[in-house]
Each structure stands twice: as structure tokens, then as C-alpha cells.
Length: 105
Length: 315
Ligand code: FES
Image (tube, rainbow over all chains, first blue to last red):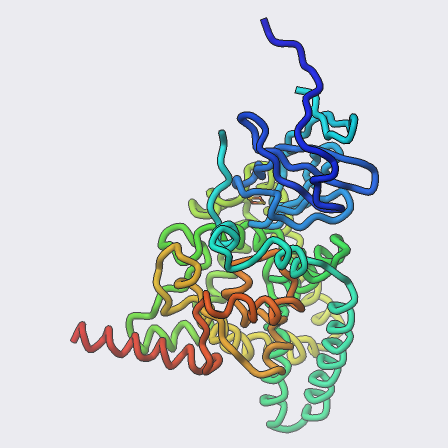
């Protein structure tokens, strides 16, 4: 039977790079945590176009741009907003609780 | 756990050639530097267009068209920056300006983006880098490449192929399936646009654009071929970025024209860095890339040496 999803802490808010993207290894996953004007968002760290690490990319507002080919995604819903990115990226439901960023996994 | 692929940037960061703080600072975007440069660009185009007008009834129209052509072919450099979305912070401006450049030089923007992605992933790797320019085997091949005749043949073949709804084997590798219809549509629109321009000229009897645009483009393209050769030709055909790419130090007017793309090694290390930050990135990375102090000519001297050595060896 599938395990029920729960909130799990991944990093303290104080450890995030302000208004930028922070790389976190969480169990088997590489995550990208985004500090945006409307809150914290979380996605898988690897670009679904060619596998580059989004955490080395350029981050502006709510858009993360891949460092390899500059494909871009809206971190709020994972939608691809600039080619060569064409597929939605995996994002996680996230919240801040007691100074920790938590994701629902 | 899935691992990120190794790129020149991840290597540079891991080896301490570049710090994360520096990277962050260099990547910052802004609209202002590009808008200022574009204003100068428009003045420059107005000046070269005026030269053609002034020289209209004399043989001087040919050098004037050549000068105009040198400016026109450098729309490639601007389009290339737009492909990377680094010219403007405002994302759609990159798309708009990139499209205008593409229509100026017969290079559909979307297609170029996908082709260019693989150039960055597989730089200088035979059979994988779709933009690889092989080292000419003879000076005859070198001259033929610089004439731009093979370039134009390829471009026309490419656009007509796409307009007919076909992609080559190589193109199928780098254009995602969901984008095929858009690539075909782009080619049809571009050909339709040129067709319309020619039709309007025929109907009005005013063929000015042939002299202000088409002939200058053909006259200027060898200059762009000369410059494009300096980026990788003659460098080793290996994956290591510090070896396979060449930065050429050139004078301010050439840097202006090519949107600082002479800092090619730096650009390949971190393609997210906008043109205006490349000279500063150069100061950080210059010990780790191949720098040609002698400019474009210096790069060609190196290419000549290699062609000469290869032909002697073959003789
Ligand atoms: S690897 Fe991210 S856009 Fe290509």
C-alpha cells in the first residue's frame, strides 16, 4: 500500500539564498528551493530538457532559467515559459513551518 | 539519485575558477544596456544606409554596400544573444528582437535556438555539434568557406526543406517533436515574407531593397564567416571547453558589432551571462580559457598554420 504523504522539513528558511535559488539534497532527490516575492516554492533541481542543474541558473521573480540552454520555468506551477523547455517541471507543494521549509511528499 | 550533467559551468564552479557569488552577479539582467546599444545600432544603420544613398550613381556604391553588409551580417550576433535570452531582462523583447534579426539574415529564430542548444551541449564534437565548422583541409576549401557560397546553399536548402515539412536526420535529433509544426510554419512565414517583399518591389518598380539589403548581405557574409571561424576552428575537437573554444581579443568597434561574442570561451562557460558582463567575466576566467591576443587575424594565422602543416604532411 502506498505510504500516505506527509509534510517533511527540507531546509531552514534562514539558510536559503535570499531572492534566489538554493540547492538541497533531500533523500534520493535533488531539490531547488526558490525564495520569491510571493513565498517559497520547490521543484526538482534537474532541468527536464537536458538534465542541467537549475540551481546554477538565473533566477528572476518567479522564473528559473536553466544554465545550459536558458530554457525557463515558472516555479509556482512548473510550467515551461521559454524554449527549449517545453514540458512542465515537477514542483512540490511547499510551506514554511517553524522556520523550516517543508514539502508534501 | 539522478545527477546533474557535467557542463563547463559545473566544472568551473567545482574547480573554483568561478564562485557562486561571482556567477550570480555576472548573470544579472537589465534592459538598459541593450536599449542604449540598440539606439547606437540604429544610428549606425542609418549612417551606412545614407552612404549607399550618397554613392548611388557611382562605383562607390559597392564599398558602401559592403560596409552596410558588415553591419547587417552582425544581426547574427544580436540574434545569437537573443537565443540565450541575455540581451534584455524583459523576456519577450529577446524573442521580438531575435525574430527581427532572423528575418534580416534568413535565419528562423526558433530553428536556430534548437540547433544552438546542441552546439552548446556538444561543442566541437564531430557528428554531434550541428554548428561545427571543420578545419579546412586545403586553402581552396578555406577560400570556398569564406566565400559564404556553401553557407547560403545550406541556408536556402534548410529553409525550403522546413517549408516543405521535412527535417534532416541531424535536425530530428535536436528539435523536439512538439515543435516540428512550429519550425515548418516559421520557414513558410519567412519565405512568404521574402516573397511579399519581392512582389511589392516588382509591383512598385522600386528595387531599392536589393541594393540596401540583399546585395549588402551577400557582400558582408564572408566577414561573418571569417569571424565565425575564429570561435572554434583549429581548436581541438574535444569536449573540454578550455581547449575547444577560442576567445579573440578585438578592438572596440568589432566588440560593439558582435555584442562581445568575441569573448567566446567565456560565453561557452556560462551562457547565461549577458553580453555587457562578458568583459568582466573574461577577467575572472582568462587564465582558464584559450585567449588569442592577436584578434580575429591572429586566429586565422593559427588556422593558416594548421592548414599549411596538414597540406605539407599530406604532400
Ligand atoms: S538542459 Fe535545461 S534548457 Fe536544456
